[in-house]
Length: 284
Image 1 (cartoon, helix red, strand yellow):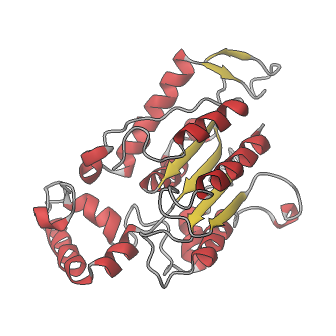
Image 2 (cartoon, rainbow, N blue to C red):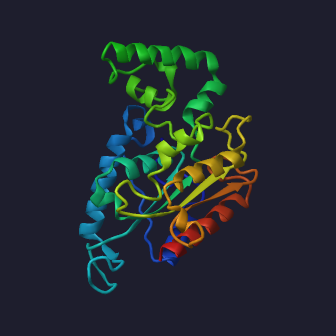
């Protein structure tokens, strides 16, 4: 639902990317702003592929030596990407790493999820009565083949289709990746591809950054424990013999007292940026 410059740490992130040989590129997708309610993660995934195509064709990339030649800087070529997502952007990254064609997935060497929260769990606690009512309506619209029609204005803060509502609010919905009521096995099914790719085409460095004071996380959820569970699920496909090897894997940080977008406390954003800096250094 955000657009350009959505978080207060954007300028710090840009400097950290520059210091580590990356450029920060922020796309405005069709699902940005009020397009949030009519989009899908599949559409986001397709638009990210288009962006990657453009950057490879029209921007200078530093190759990482996979093209049988020495490391070099040239137009296009074998670019490497690190995807950074905030809030719903975290779902977009997980979905991209699962559903994008192999030729795109293998170019992603790192990912950062900042505030990967569950829309479903927040809605269940925030407005339980309206949640149940609207979920029932969305399911009824699905049964009537009306998934792409909009729900009533009262259902959501932005215009929203029944399909998008179910993706976000139904257990097991397309966007429902980070809920605390999943078993460890269910989390592994949803997140196990993030570090070690399906076809083992890539093994990535990852960072899960959770805010201990996130206003969109129910108070009964143990944020630190959930962060550890999410990270464990992402690392679940790493072979046992690699357990002690310093190789690509997901790490985590639970930032004390931090809110959803890290605007508070003042130390939250710098703590997060330091973790991102260390991840980018590992990618080099």
